[in-house]
Amino acid sequence: MEGRVGAAQAEDPARAVRRKHLEEEIGEAKKRKTTYTAVTVFCMILAIVALIPPIIEFADYGMLVSGSTPALLVGAIIMIVLTMICAYLSEQEKKRIRELEIERARLE
Image (cartoon, rainbow, N blue to C red):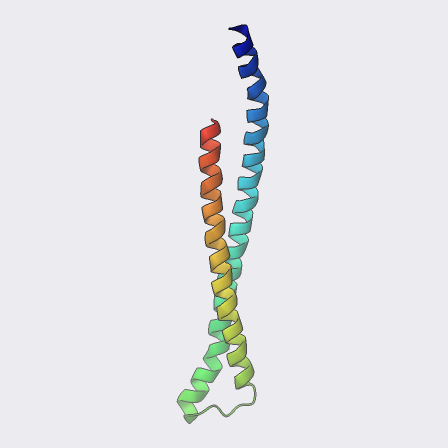
């Protein structure tokens, strides 16, 4: 009987250390998710801003006449791709946070 009590007491520090590490991982994952979300929004805004001049130009003249228009279109496409990548990474971090919180709940 005493051996079991000693084993249970020996597990508590290990659980506390694991719980502390989980808390740190959750905090870091939340920071990454926030960063990915902010970059997603920023890239989307840049894509919209880059698309406005070509749209206005096409509406006014019926074709793209400016020399900078192709560069703006390429920039907008790149920003849209970056937006999709950052949105995906944000969702992955969201899943990771959920998994870590489930694991933390199991330890408690």
